[in-house]
Image 1 (cartoon, rainbow, N blue to C red):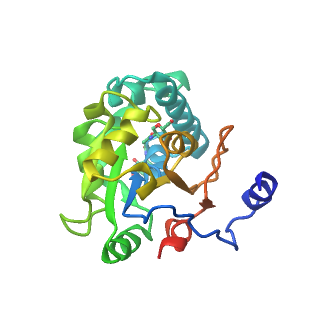
Image 2 (cartoon, helix red, strand yellow):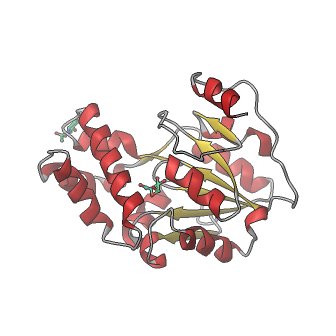
Amino acid sequence: MAEARQAARQQDHYSTLPSIRTTMPIRAIIFDLLTALLDSWTLWDKAANNDSAQGYKWRRRYLELTFGCGAYRSYEDLVRAAASDVGLSETAPNFLLEKWDDLQPWPEVKETLDRLKAKGYALGVVSNCSVELGRRALQRCETSPKTFDAFITAEEVGFYKPHPDTYRSILSALNVRPGEAIFVAGSSGDVVGAAAVGMQVVWHNRIGLPALPGSAPLVEARSLDVALKALE
Ligand SMILES: *[C@@H]1O[C@H](CO)[C@@H](O)[C@H](O)[C@H]1NC(C)=O
Ligand SMILES: *[C@@H]1O[C@H](CO)[C@@H](O)[C@H](O)[C@H]1NC(C)=O
């Protein structure tokens, strides 16, 4: 199984998708926001003087800081600290925060969300973000004010993912048990973190991030619709 996943990871798209194992019927789908639903990479790259190698380093550093930091610290401060750690000047985080409303969902996102909604799934989002930036980013993915049934930010929970309280808060906001939800991860920390609270995890690994030890997503794919095919 691990070997098969390893081999599959080397391809761009996966041809065989396992079906979702269900002991309980799946009622809700919970998403990471800034990586799984939104293409925030493009904006980070632009902010890093259009140097995508620098943008990637900055973003990886940011993920390391959020992964390691546990209790919530200002999202904006972490973005700035990560920029400074990789040698970017203040203009980079300033640009990112000023252009925040330019964030775009991945092209297939709105259609996929509408399809899942029409199938009757409750949709939730939990984001490592401040309330204000999180709400603005969420709006970029909505096709109507009813697209999402619940939304929680790290700021409200008091912890960043992968702290278990972040995932538990969104489960309780949706009023579902872990076995009744699928978590759609954007990056490796979520794959492990959401599984640790008992959810089955699907990994929308758009840019091919490396997996963390213990990572065992049901499906890993480069686009959201492929990642969720088993549910549609
Ligand atoms: C990156 O390029 C875009 C145009 O493609 C430009 O609008 C933007 O200001 C550039 N980024 C920076 C930080 O200069
Ligand atoms: C928040 O942290 C988790 C764990 O490291 C990570 O998986 C996730 O992508 C982060 N989210 C953002 C928006 O950076």
